[in-house]
Image (cartoon, rainbow, N blue to C red; front, top):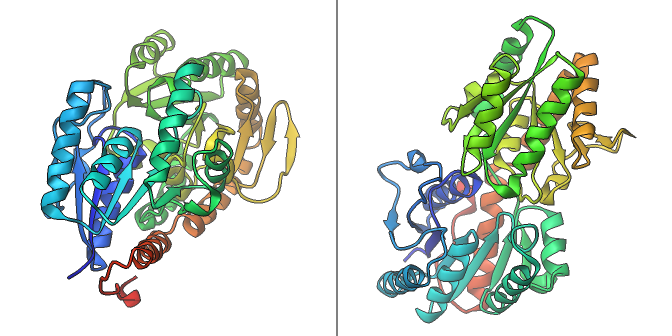
Amino acid sequence: MNPTIVRVLTRLGAGGPPIHAVLLTRELSKLGYSSTLVTGSRDQQDGDMSYLLRKDDRVHSIPEMSRSVSPWQDLRALIALYRFLRRVRPSIVHTHTAKAGVLGRIAARLAGVPVVVHTFHGNVLNHYFSPPANFAVRMIERALAYVTDGICVLAPQQAHEIADCGIAPRDKIHIVPLGMDLTRLSEIASLLNLARATRSGGRITVGWLGRCVAIKDIPLMLAVVKETLRRTDNVRFVVAGDGPEVPAVRALADELGPERFEFLGWRKDVDSVLAGCDVLMQTSRNEGTPVALIQGMAAGRPFVSTAAGGVVDMVSGPLRREQDGCRWFDNAILVEADPAAFAAAFCALTENPGEIVAMGQCAAAFANATYSLPTMLQSLDALYSALLDKKSVSVPPVEAAHL
């Protein structure tokens, strides 16, 4: 009998975790695992990423589970998860995102699941809540870590942060970088560059892709747009996303007009958005490893971002120079959370468009070398096997030849 994995994700809303969870469910099934994705309901203001699913994906829905906090609904979701796990009796439960991490890990232990794993895609330990709430969240995560066999993070910075916060000992934390099939983006990178080269006017377009929520610091993003456009007419901004802070974004887009700032709303066709951009921007207060930046780099787009969370591990090469609140690397620019620093970076790029091309080439090479799908699968297979062996759970090995 093949090892059985139940992967628990709060919802198929906008963001990177659904891409990651759906991909793992599908790809690990190809490697010999019996893999099922359990997911809940989207909130009204969530984007819908259910389009990621295929007819042959094994998915179980628990409608009571959602991102919103509701003691009664959360209890019902916990009971539903427990009953499902008791019926399926998986060898491994692997949870993703905060709510799924709480409900899924508790249900797994109550159901007697041998191995429990959790992935921090980012974390809610900082910048999400008030200080008392942050303290409570850390206490909950520390308690959950005791009943978790393996904790996965996407970047070294996240491992240090979780260990430094006392959530779990370092030997329980495993760095497993995101892996994606970037073949398609790599193949069309030259076409995207052609589209960029054929645009007229000598302007660059800066793209922002993501959820319009507080942790992404939408006020900073809007301030960056205003400050940059105050300094130069050679930059245009495009925003693609959805979420509760969309009204503020749409209002500024209406005020400035699409020639200066265009709001696209939620878009499934990331390729076409990237084709219209020269550089990507991110303004987050906290991050894991943003999928949008990986996709952008694979398509030859450098990025300008705050040094938030795992983003600091997404730059390549040594520090080339530092000025005006900007740290320049081979593939990206890390900037202070200050509109003036972002504006300085964009103005500098408009003065040297050849640097954008060179940085984009470095970005594509870095993305393809770092975010490999086979490497991620091999890392997780090794982790699962080690944890199953530790618990003396006997399952047949997955053939490495398939990786």
